[in-house]
Amino acid sequence: MKILVTGAAGFIGFHLALRLSSRGDTVVGVDSINDYYDIQLKYDRLAELGFEKNSITANKLIQSSTIPTCSFIQIKLEDKVSLDKLFEQEKFDIVVNLAAQAGVRYSLTNAQAYIDSNIIGFTNILELSRFHKIKHLVYGSSSSVYGLNESIPFSTAHNVDHPISLYAASKKSNELMAHVYSHLFNVPTTGLRFFTVYGPWGRPDMAYYIFTKSILEGTPIKVFNNGNMARDFTYVDDIVEGVIRVIDNPPEGNVDWSGKTPEPSNSKAPYQIYNIGKNEPVKLLDFITAIEEELGIEAKKEFHPLQPGDVTMTFADVSDLVGKLGYKPKTAVKEGIKKFVTWYKDYYKA
Image (cartoon, rainbow, N blue to C red; front, top):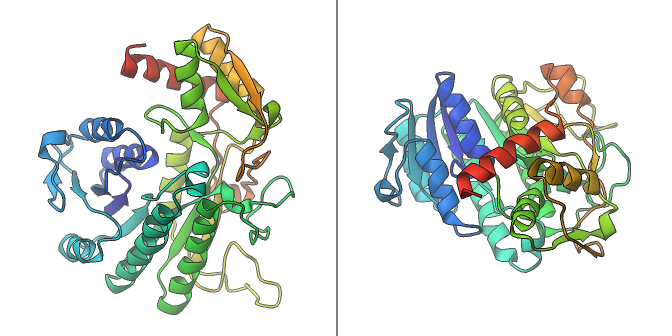
């Protein structure tokens, strides 16, 4: 298949582009290469895909020097004209939209970035998927949509109408917008609620990355909610495998769906929502311990109250993923942390 991967210079998008290319798909990567975090890391990911920094120019499609079936173009999702030209030229079968303004805390002070990328940009993806007859649109959502929900584990059957950050609200909006296009225009869409993704080539603003950097530098780490938190940490390779399973299985619509007792995760339209998580929350202090043990250094800890926008626990119910696609993430935290630390030390020569 020919697959568009937006956010290809990002954490998950980079890993997905590698995996799709390795199995023989033709991949076109798109990314704006914004400066939300160190752009050198983004350029280094692209270099791993065969795109050197000096060859990347806005709105110019370039071919990978190492992967014959992979190409890349720097475009903002808000630039509908350039995106439309790309869709018209490349005739994609599948679109995987992983480009988004990420981060809960950043959304507290930089609201416009989320509107531009996650709302306007996603609208453009929906419109172009509609007009160019895309066979399946897969897009990244987030566990943060569960917001004030206290029913554990988080299920796609739960109500998610009470987000507590603009980031979460933008992801919930994406799910609603996708349903409209599935219902009105028969665009098959699948939204994936990712749960705390970690691993090599990750985002420097994520806790595990910050912890590792601080521990190696001997500086204190900030432990929020006094450590009384748990996350369903999910290794990036497990996330990518889940995305691929979804790509290969577009929704067809649930003929038994009823508006009298509406199931939130699917519809009569070709629309589906999945959780992708380890289904095994880990206490934050235990996660820190795993990093300490792998580094062989004890962290200096500063305990702080819960941050605005944060939730105390995430825990994915993945029964839909298992039942419909026969898949469940499996990488243990110690194994995943070992792989991350090995990469981190090599990348930063730590």
